Length: 357
Image (cartoon, rainbow, N blue to C red; front, side, top):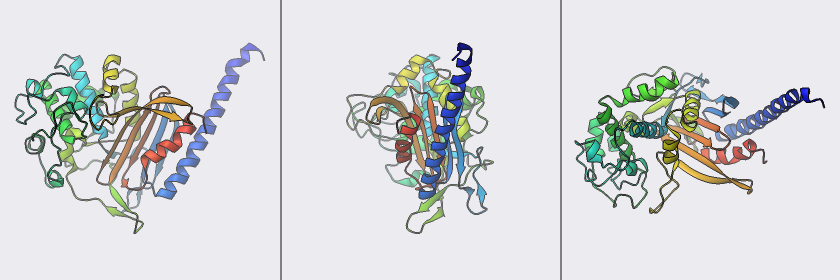
C-alpha cells in the first residue's frame, strides 16, 4: 500500500471500529434497560468523541413526557465532586491549606471537631463527625437554610478520633460549603457559578433552591413487587446543599469531567491530591476527596485506574465514572430509583470499551 493512503486507511479503520463499538453498546444497553425498567439518560464519550448517547423512559410519568438528551436530573452526591474541586481551587488561590483546622477557616463553627478536624479529613470522610442523619431523616422534613442545616445537623459530636476511620457523611460536605462561603464572602451558588459553571459553559447545571427548574425530570421509585413506578417521597432534598443538591444533564457532566481530569479546572498537582486515597484508616474503602479512586481488572488481564462518583437521593440515581488512562467518561442519570444496578451496568460495559469481550 502506498504511504499516501495510510492516513485514509487508518481513518476508515477507526470509523469502522467506533461504529462497531457503538452498536455493541446500544445492543447491551437496550437489552439491559428493558429488562430492568431503567428510566434515564446514558452518555459514554472518549475525549471529544461520543461513543454512545441515548435516552430511556419518561421524564414525567403522569404526563407521559419522555426523557430527552437535554433533560436535567438531580445529581445527588455528584455534587460532592463539584464541592471538592472548589476546595482545591481555593487552596490553589491561597485561601487556606488542607491541614488547616475547621476553626481556622470557619471561626463560627461550634461543633466538637472545630479544633480537631482539618479540611482534608472533611474531604475524605475521615473527620469522625457524627452523621448528618444521626436522628434519621428529620433533617429533610422541612425547609431549612444552609445555616440551619450546619448548626442543627452538621455540628455534632465526634463519633471517632479524626483521621482514624472512614465514615461516609454528608455533614462533612455541608461544612466544606460553609468554608467556601467564609473564605470568598459569597454564596456557595455564586462561587459554583463563577468558578465552574460559567467558565465551562454548563448551561444545564445549577443548585436546587425550592424552585421550579425547567426541563427537570420528576423522580420516581420502581416498586419491584408491583412492577410499577411510584411517586417520590416528599422530602426537601435541597437541605443536602453542598453535599447533594445540584442538578445537571449528561452533556454538562461530560464537560465537567473532561475539564477536571484534563487539568483545566484545577492543576495536575491538585488533581493528583484529589484522587489520592487515604491509607491507614479503619473501614478504608478507596475513598479520595469526594469520589472513589481505585484499580480494577478487565478480563483478568490488566489493572486500570478508575474514578467513580455515584449518587442516589430519593427517586434519583446517578453515576459519573472515568476511565483515567483511556479518558473515557460514563455518565448515567436516572429518575427511576431501583430500576437498575449501576455498578452491574459498569462491570458489563467495561469489556466493550476495552475491546476485551
